[in-house]
Amino acid sequence: MTRVSNTMIGLLNLLTLLISIPIIGGGLWMAKSTATCESFLQRPLMVVGFVILLVSLAGFIGACFHVVWALWLYLAVMLFLIAALLAVTVFGFVVVGPGGGIVVPGRAYKEYHLQSYSPWLRKRIEKPSYWMTVRSCILGSKTCSNIVTWTPMDYMTRNLSPIQSGCCKPPTSCDYQAPMMTQDPDCYKWNNDPNLLCYECDSCKAGVLEDVRRDWHRLSILNIIMVMLLIVIYFVGCCAFQNAKRADDYYSYPESRMYKARPKWNFY
Image (cartoon, rainbow, N blue to C red; front, side):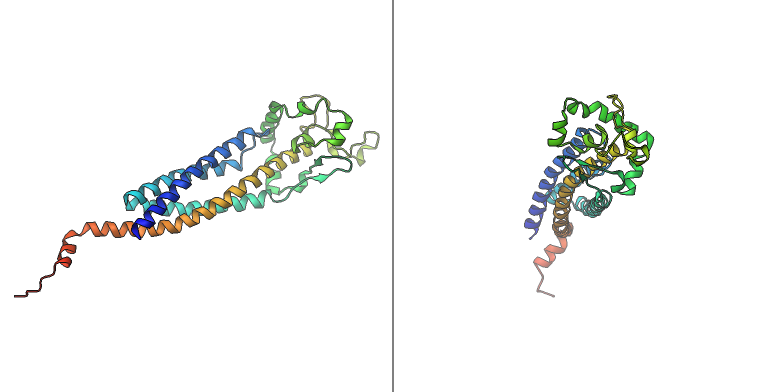
């Protein structure tokens, strides 16, 4: 039983160590590849990935070399890690749960409204200093330059990303011949200047939040798989810890074992 448990925990930790690498890489890729440089939900996942990497090393060493203190540390941190990953996953679902686009009649794309998203996300995205950083990233990504040459027919038949839908054009409902009071406020924030466009529109901020929402839903699948795997590894680790501790106690008292192995029957 000792050999089986230790071998299993060693193999499982080796697997977890290998899995932590794409978790870290995926967090880095999503944080840097997005047009908004938005990474506040990816950072916790990257931290968890690094912790998984370190904990897996400790568990692997403890199981393979019967290092009791390493296994003890491994189990303590693993329990904390499971709780932290669960908290990050649940928090992500609660925060990015609301949202989604509204179908525009006669168009292939959707439009997004800031009021559809959670108060926590809205409060964060509406901070002027924070929005300036995101806005600079959108400008630097040339996201809107990709649709500059589109014709009216393209807008009728082709899809737009959430950021393109919110930041690169005025709302479809805008009618500049109608009275101002009946218009979406974003209609009058629109400007043909390539450096302005609709970057100050609420629809642009909503497009950014929709982009974050979609990224986080992809990451949540990986989070759930990791939580299930870590729970299995934790229980197997408890068995390995008990086995390593039993082996450590066994080798700590050789005299007692020798006495019990060869009892004296002659009491005189």
